[in-house]
Image 1 (cartoon, protein in one colour):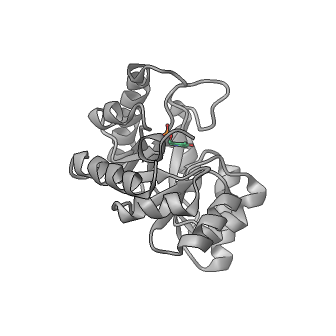
Image 2 (spheres, rainbow, N blue to C red; image 1 turned 120 degrees about the vertical axis):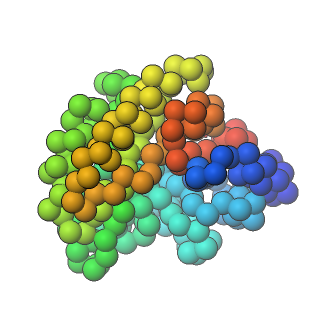
Image 3 (cartoon, rainbow, N blue to C red; image 1 turned 90 degrees about the vertical axis):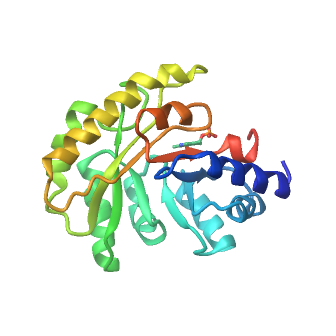
Length: 220
Ligand SMILES: *Cc1c(COP(=O)(O)O)cnc(C)c1O
């Protein structure tokens, strides 16, 4: 799709989202020109899976939007990630949380983070098991340079969006449970779930953030 088409598609998609649902444009493999087109269409947040790719995009576009880390984060990339991202959506272990916290401490910043939940409970997927999320968050309460602001989940690999519904529903129930605990320093305000094929189901199940690539940019 050309600039105009991406801009228009983005506009229409944003207009179709219910109040309170935020679009994160999933920017992996896209050119700066394509990213500029979604920004022209109204995107306020771009998600990247890799630190290096995010660095390139940020160099090209600047801080005109917020930049989220939506890919699995390696510990040796925590420093770079802490420096460039505005939110890390993929915290799934105490180890990686500690690395980000330490890096943010030296930068004198507090990083908003989401806990990535493996709602499909597939071996190959990243994310903490749903029944371990509360324990993990408990281990992070003392960290002063990250702030837990919600949950993120991927759906199962499937062509049928309905296959994602049970996992999304369980993640929302977990989200509500954690919000009800009212943990100190934790504010459960973002539930990031749903992609091009599944975002409508995700919104029905309570998503407040949807991460969309293909629908905006066309196939990769
Ligand atoms: C690529 C990606 C998306 C968006 O996927 P599409 O099917 O292209 O919309 C969302 N979340 C993550 C973590 C991704 O890597």
